[in-house]
Image (tube, rainbow, N blue to C red):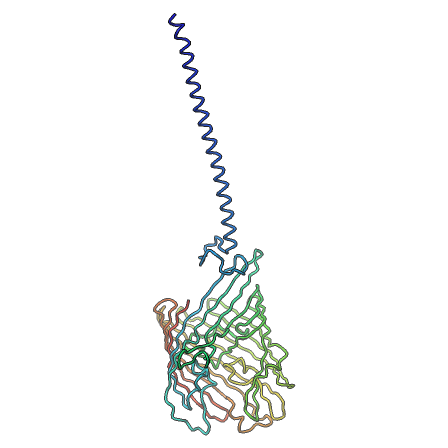
Length: 447
């Protein structure tokens, strides 16, 4: 009887435990399924978020290329997605004391801001006035530039650049040395490039900027260097480049010795070509120039060649040099010191021959301290056999030359403190001459 009474209870107890166990298993299965569903949803959300972030980065040009970004939102709101924006320039103070033998360089002239040989005064009859030295301070050569670069998926490279400085001259209405020393903004470069092509304003293809020495002055070796920035269309392939450039003819008249620009008469663009080879030893460049020289209905042609380069002499020294010669080279040499062509008394136009060059030695005493020694010269062949050559024609420039020596110290990266002593001389065809002596100092910070 006892067994009969206990058996149903045992059977009932086993059934309750089984049910409880089954309930727990079902609950665990539900939790596992919920976790699996949650994990799948999380993975989908992460994948979607990554896709959205990648799209935002591409749209903002902030792809994961390791380059620092200024901000998260696009700077070039109208530019191609993925474009790179850059900005730079420098702030430069120039302070100089000048002593000229034949009178003061005119106030407001470019020669008061930097060395321009054509502004050295030369008086008549050798009567040298008693002129005291004079001092000028300015920040006109401070500059900044903006550029936008873009590379397409197909590998095409685009670049747009504009650079300006403050060498725009003072304005009587906006300010001058009396009060605010206002200077206008001057466009130096404004061009776009596409792979091997360039269109816009920049250095002439006839000029080797890489050969210019480090000067405290704006240029320093002004007489002997080609120096032109102008609008052009250029094609470059490896070491070769060729360009069609803005034409302009400067003409002097033998009867009046007057100089004028006859650029409105030119039809054919100036043609320039250049070849450059370089290596650890430095670089060497040869350039050619072909021109149409035109004034009114009269025209002739001009051609010139320029050789230049830089030779490294060890880790601390280098030699930089340039040699130029040709007919009709005047506008391209020494800031237009000589005319491209001469108009004689019969109204015929003649190309004028000119030559110039410089040599400069650079030595670094330490990584922070260096010096540059420079000599520069230019000469022009004034043809006295031209019809109408008279007394006024002897005022034409025959020769100009200068020496420069400087010391530049950089106590911190991008900060330059420099001093330069200069001597320059301008000689006319009748052997009259005037000279310039200058102490020029600068503080320059590049960014």
